[in-house]
Length: 486
Image (cartoon, rainbow, N blue to C red; front, side, top):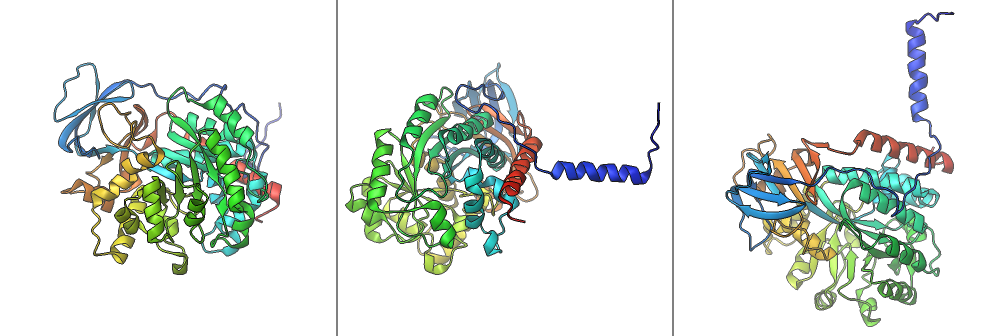
């Protein structure tokens, strides 16, 4: 038998070749991603008590507690009290912790998570819109699956238990299947908003037959976690992202919008639309299109008359403070105070993680700072901010009967934060601690529907490293397919 002598040079060369191979895109293997395919295993639901935590219920009918207990059985919140006796329950020590509802993110382009590898916030040619416009049309269903998985583990690590997956690159019903499969495999609660593919001609209708097929096969979700909606293209010109935004996202007429919205409503799907340009609300109102099933995104340019219409029609607005605060002043300001004063439903969202972090704590802090800077005469409490990120998100998505607060009878979507960590301690007011000081790294436990999905800051069922590696492989393969960016 021949023996090969292992030298330092040979070892280093072998390690270099292995590293290069790991960075080389490989063909993505097609997997069955549909409603009939088996879901990934998730932790079982059981019976547990979170013992001795500071409990922030976000329910005016259920008092907050200092050193209180939360009892969970089979995914439901059974009781919230100072002391609960349940001998059969697993006890989770909540001493030194804050127990609160999970965050609800009402507008998150999860499919763009892959592009974190390429997007640069300070390089125009590699901005969010040019990258998504160039690479989005090349995405396969498997790419979409991997992107949503990456966005999902980031969301869970940040304490987001419900996400509105704003899929405005739904290239086919199979892409929708893949994204819904990813959401199911993550165990997250959420709405999938069926959209149109990047680059679709403005006068081309959305694929309503495909949406109908996806609804028929996926809804109602047997686990009660997933719902379906429709995301609309823009009405009129956009004012951000230049030509790339217009070319990739669409600029529709009111007739185009009515055609798509009537189709979505015939399927019973709620509708969501960006307002990244001159406010379209009056044109939509004149066409009789604004209703309680409509959510708008980016509240920057509304008028007092439009806010009255939004309140009367029951429409809502989702604000994404981290990215909206980067927009030039002439493109508008975040109108949180005006919307709240008018009684319009408002919620908070991330938008995307291609060039910002997934961090509801930062979103709340930015929103508070901008509001305080603009409207100091209009008080905004930290508790109200936390409500925007939790219960108000559930109201916006129409699921407040299931989640958004720690209320007996609702599902157990909960967070435990280590209030004893150096960046938070010592705590006097828990709302101050959460909104002003907390970070995703303070999250010790995340429960969705009673399942412990993260504990001790780590996933309990998912392989985060593999999900990241799979996303990186998909992104590199897209770059190779496009021959860009080099």
